Image (tube, rainbow, N blue to C red):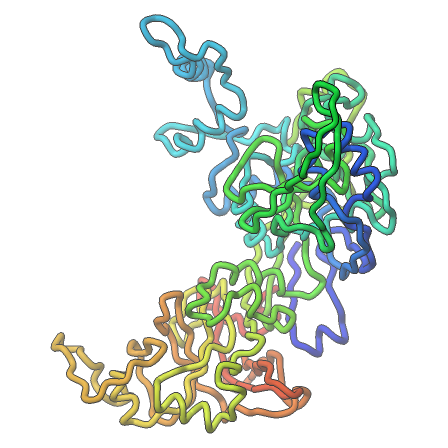
Length: 584
């Protein structure tokens, strides 16, 4: 199944969001975020060793969350398999094919024999040890792997936050924020668990799951009938889940101290000190090795982005605004030195233009490869995946995202002033980001991520001072001789690799090193008008057979800058991708 979206401002306002197969729609609303104070203090008194963890759940507030989509289950092994097959990403260690002979050899090595005696006699070649070995040896000659059918519906684990983001980029989605995750789990209630105030041993995987044979185990999604009010499953227990939120204190948090009884029964004062580290992200949901008090909806844990363990998985989310997620994930690693600002804070993702294509795999064919989970053999339990469950396929897109305030550095000057400044000091202005999964034929631009830079019309002598390649002239330095330039002027962007016409305005596409790979001429002059008078959208020009872009970036006082140019996107076989129908 393939679906395609063409976004312009008009489309967004009139048509609204498009539902993605495989996701549950979560309506906008207020969500209760954070734990209540008195129960938290009681938990600390009973378990002071975990005081800092419990304190990090404070305070309880009500937060407005815009509507979004989220997957009904964590990402499973069979879902992740399609990503591994398509991209060559490292398979999880739970898929490793290791012979009995090899396993015995690794156990022997792990015990660390010296003079006939083991230095580490307690060594066990468990999942964690296998993961460490797999990380180093998965590409060894002759090493094989295969995703076992019995764990097809288990949440995929031993995946880092960065691995999860790579998967999200491949399918055109993202990870949920902490607020979104809580909204999906709690809905309009203040429950501790998705199904009520009390923990159920029969509805979540934990150390006390009933029947006991299912305790301490990862299990197939759909094993438990535990949906939230929105129909989202397995949100506590199973595995911790990544969010896309940094490990920060909740709004309104204040440090505190309190008296608790120590191991000897005496009262002592403690100062809970939660981990606030913006290089880490928040995990939600608890896992199958925890007690119920550590796996409430409010439980939150700071986690390293590079760590990958058996207790952590993830689920995916999507914004209701088309193209936002694709643009966000593809631009997150752009260098702020070239773009001018950090992409996450400087780009206006709500005004992203472009086209995208989604694909889901045939679920019937994938389900046929499943086999019974080892823990469920002999039990009258058959996993029932939600009707909304799907296996996502590859996504491709062409997105153009404006910067929020690109001309602020020049105090919102008119174009005449911007052009004058550029001719004087060679400073060009970044105006947005272009990300494409398909080539741009006319300018020989390969798929990639580029900063869009406005290049004013420059005088011939200015271009010569910059060492530019003027149209109709030989490329400077083509004979290998060094070029001597009188009164040289170094521009902010290296644009020496293609011909430039004096007095013509361009949009330069620059790589992460600040080197322009293409100069796209503007159609007409750029404009500075009231925001509503400046176009922002895509259209197909049947005369030129190109995709025309009307690109708007914000100015102050209700005004906006407008740029018009044309692109010629094509697929790998050279077929035009300039029309919406070409993406179907």
